[in-house]
Length: 155
Image (tube, rainbow, N blue to C red; front, top):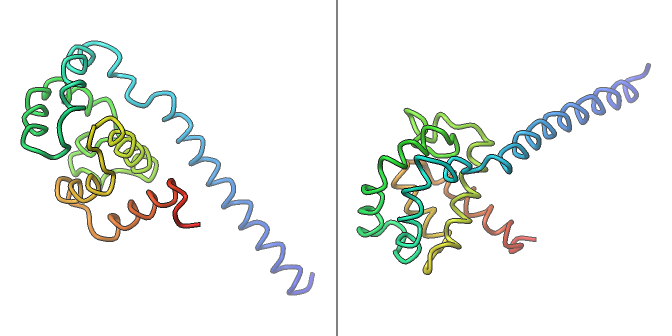
């Protein structure tokens, strides 16, 4: 086998391996579709979310009112965070213990949550969460670039 054929063969192996790894990530994300926030639909969480979902909808994310509601929701949120790894609070070291699938689900959760607030803004949420969860400018930019991708603004 000559050098060109060897290079092509090795490159095809690499392409196949990358494809296999992407499929594994897709399969993990696919599982998250069906189980995302499922614990909110059952006790003990449903009781708290029935009461606080309308209140949270009508307040500004990150505001003092919002923070107060989170304090009142604490028993329900503790259970929720314990059972849902897409929340930084699930992990002792927050985002730094998450994997890419957790981050993608978390980001999608944030984006969808902005649609539930009357004055929701994903860009503001990303900035607020940067301080709340302690991630850096690089991850901030990745999140904002992803918003543009999802809004088809960077084609």
